[in-house]
Amino acid sequence: MRRDIAFLRHGRPVRLRPPSPTLTLLDYLRLGERATGTKEGCAEGDCGACTVVLRRLVGNRLVYQPVNACILLAGQADGAEIIAVEDLADGDALHPVQRAMATQHGSQCGFCTPGFVMALFALYHAPRPGGLDRDRVNDWIAGNLCRCTGYRPIVDAALAACAGPPADRFAAQEEAIRQALAALDDGDDVMTGEQGFFAAPAGIESLAALYLAHPDAVLVGGATDVGLWITKQLRDLPKIIWLGRVRGLDAVEPEPEAITFGATVTHAAALPHLARIDPDLGELMRRFAGLQVRAVGTIGGNIANGSPIGDVPPALIALGSTLTLQRGDATRSLPLEDFFIAYGKQDRAAGEFVRSVRVPRLGADEQLRCFKVSKRFDQDISAVMGAFKIVVDGARVAAARIAFGGMAATPRRAPATEAALRGADLRDPATWQPAVAALAADFSPITDQRASAGYRGAVAPALLRKALTEIAGTPTRHTRVAGIREDADAA
Ligand SMILES: Cc1cc2nc3c(=O)[nH]c(=O)nc-3n(C[C@H](O)[C@H](O)[C@H](O)COP(=O)(O)OP(=O)(O)OC[C@H]3O[C@@H](n4cnc5c(N)ncnc54)[C@H](O)[C@@H]3O)c2cc1C
Ligand code: FES
Ligand code: FES
Image (cartoon, rainbow, N blue to C red):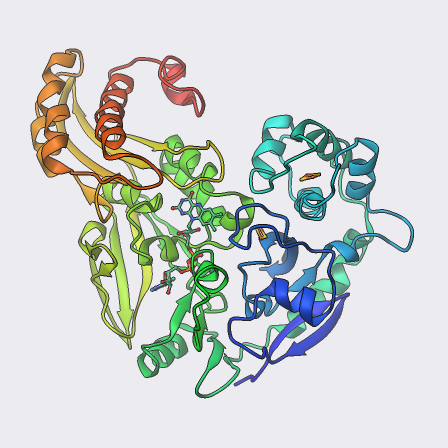
């Protein structure tokens, strides 16, 4: 059992017993180290001003993970090297991304600049198969806000700095860092205290035992929700169990019929696998928050938080996914939709955690569509999210699984709509009408800051019609402003 957390700074090991389990990485840097180059803008993961990079060993590969330090707990840096904006320049020589930001005029007031520089530093070190273009850079910086410069020169800076392979001193140090990070990976459970603690169990058995002993502890996957309980709700969370060191909980297990995602698979790691099930899932995940949130936010957290506007649950419910929970050494599985009982209430006992979710692939006669409607295109949570799996028999709908987020107190299926759609003729929109009308029987949406009940009541039928229109053969360049499906348009 280890009593402190361990990470690298400037290539050297640092051991820290956080004064509070909820110490954020930003407070550690700014208040602990007085490293004030990293800025706080929103303190809720939205603006990217606080971006730092965690360099981690994944297998034998070094990954450069851009994270929002404002909502990341300091303990989540265990096992990683923390790289902040002050660390980039080599004496008086700017790092190539800093130089490019200066020469391309990518900064005016400068408040957002450290965050952009760190996001671009991660891009500088990221694999870039197929090269880099403006769209890719725009995606990469969707989690960073600039209020005064405008994005064109920042994108120019990214393209200029990241034109070739990485050739900075961080690339030169990689072998030494690999060894130093491997030496930190002791496989011990971490527990910083007795009454209050930051714990980071190293295996599933120790996690299960610890959570049974402390069912009042808060589990943390990426902390992209829990971080805001700390910074915005000022909640006191005396016991934290971080899942990020639990060996095997981040496994992705592809099989011919399905893919099983461990609870701590991040959205970034899940994206390519989900995109292989269907391009709409890839597009959904591309628009899930921004890079820094996707880097650490987990599939398990998106399900366990029970949010009525989480993006992953409706899509996985439409696909017929199965959730597995574990308490002690007992596991049980249930259809994902049955997990969500009511607002803030899930089918999860004290001491029980989400272990994995099994997501079936589509059959030859099945089609999926899912659409996220949000106020902003990037880095925004859904007002309405609709997911439609249609089983097609010739031109007829043989069966449907339809789920929505944002239309009820939980992510929910639409049983009346599904029943009314059975037998509809894809060539004849008049036969879709009973199903479109049935949505009003399935849902009574509410008005909140994201959308009015009237808007939601109008947009959900439009999404169903759009899904059917596309599945009936209309090319998606006629139905979408972005995220055009290549497979449909190739047909
Ligand atoms: C800027 C920003 C943008 C966002 N955009 C989106 C978006 O576009 N779409 C969207 O759906 N969400 C979005 N979110 C919300 C959040 O990122 C997601 O819900 C994310 O998936 C949460 O995962 P996490 O691992 O960070 O959860 P955490 O914050 O670690 O945990 C969330 C909840 O789940 C519990 N929990 C975590 N893991 C487990 C487990 N294995 N078993 C049991 N309980 C567990 C925690 O105790 C907590 O109650 C956004 C958040 C931010 C800050
Ligand atoms: S301060 Fe805005 S994302 Fe951290
Ligand atoms: S340079 Fe002022 S906010 Fe970006």
